Image (cartoon, rainbow, N blue to C red; front, side, top):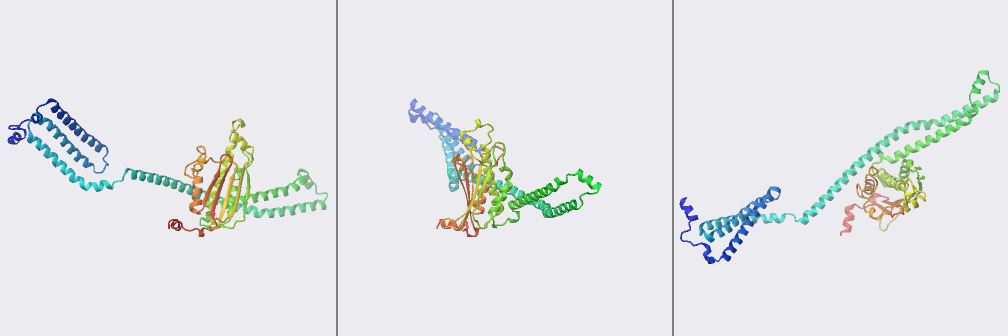
Length: 448
């Protein structure tokens, strides 16, 4: 051990390295300063690498940083030895340090060779950014799908509830409606009998005369038929409402089948009837129907009724928005101009035949409200996007409607609008869904 230490630190027979520089001060201190600066940098780099590894343990191949650190420290010690040997010729120790540095460097190089393919296989920053964008898009689609499923479940439950209520109301209403005609007939017979009695017995018994004097018989004879007629009209109205509720819910028509779209539109308008009546400063909203001669259309009737409900509700909201200001001097010029016009919703249907395509049905729902700015139109079909105040809209109505029309019925939902010019929604779906080519076929046709 003593011999080893003597060999490493011994300097007999050697001259310091400074003799090679002829002990010129500027040359000596140039080498000292350069080696010291390099050694300082070499010692700081491993410290930074170790700090990085401690903070990011998820980084792959982090053990290579340890090897690099050891190699760099050995290089730093080598430069310190170069400073030492300027005055102390311990060349054996300097050689051992260099040998240790060589061993570490060779081992690091050997370990680095198989890691190069793995490192090259790591995604580039551009690929990571693209993957992040794809993940964000998938997350948005997942959230949108989740919200649509929740909304669809709510609408399904609502449809079942409406259908159940309509069924329960329908039984007693049919009982009343079926018997009111008999009651009217019986009442008329009793009134005829009473008139005949009054003709044949002009002087009734005192007890009868007393009751006749207390009752207003002439008023009853005139008002009772009117009362029964009003009850008849009310029963008819209730039957129409029940029929509209059942047509709107369409719980028993979950499968695609030919239906009359006009019945669905009328049912939706019947449910929204209370919102069409005058409200505050807003007059009654007029509904103009211009129905074309449409055959039955293959569709999911209940889902299309949801589309009609969403678009018509938005149209009513837009028309109500014009009259929300309580004082005319607070209204803008555009709002005052719109307030001078009667609010109108126009519904048109027709059969169209596009070029090289099967026949389609077009439902046009237009209002003369404030319109939708061009900048907003590009976002109206995005889930959760809404221009309505908090608590008045979820931003799902048009998103779900667009999905129902485009994905479920292979059609188009087109918005045509401009500020101050009202809004028009065009719903175009094939007359027969069986004529629509599958998506894979259409994709192949576009990419021969």
